[in-house]
Length: 358
Image (tube, rainbow, N blue to C red; front, side, top):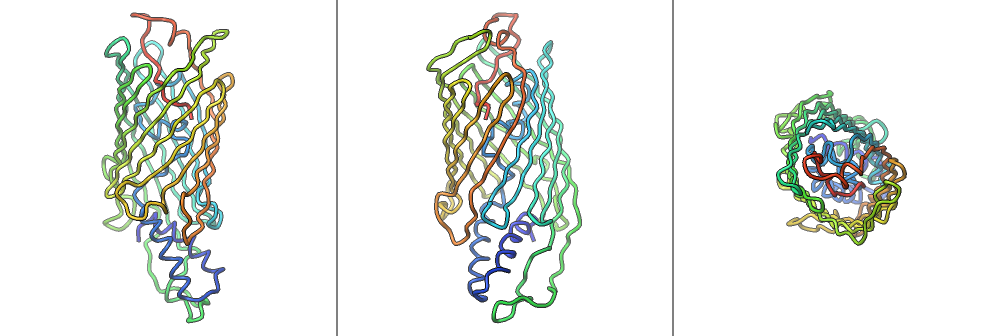
């Protein structure tokens, strides 16, 4: 059994425990969530605030938005299904001011409720920044990560445990391989950017790591594209602080095996507030309304501190009430705006990428 699917099925089975309508309705529920799980199997954990966790998006972002930063976030996903599925992110980055190098570190943990599926992955990042022209830069980054994950059969209900009236009896005769597995994963990325535009490509799990005991339990490579453009309505310095009114439409595309996802969001920056509205679609898939979502973002920045909130909601009703997703992010960053915006020529060693902060 695929490890991710195994974790997701725990939600359904615990729900079925409370559903006394008989075997037919139990299997209807199981089939419905199985479909949703299948179309989400390929994807890694994705944030509603992707640019707040940009080091997970593309390692080439390391050191491009600040001199240094520390970020932490929490997401509660599918909150309508027995408490949902929780993810925590943490990352840090540092740019060497006298060179073109940046380094970073990331940690991510996934956990299903009530002691179900668990995963933790940590990585070290390096990026090199090169100025191609006065207003054109290139960043290349890589990440080496180490992960560990463990499924659980706790709370699962199988066919051989069900009586004709839907009640549950006896232990299952199913046999599982539920040992914890560890793996090494490699990622890389490139970013080409100007003061207002960026275009990026990144690959994760490039070494196709084995993440389970079965021969087919591998994490297929993930290919991602990111792009966006910042339209300035107004920008100025106020007491050595850069302030702006701007709009940033962004688009990202993810491909893994037969899975494809398209995310589009438009941000509005009115210093110190950021607002965003976006949508997620699955191109080429049938019944995409089940997995398609809309999301809203709000963030505030004050003296280097940032707090952001993201909300994601399914577009269409389905037999399984998976519920909305809530996400909170906190971070601190140090940015020398005078160096970025006022100095020019040979004294200016780098440009700051114009991507959103949330």
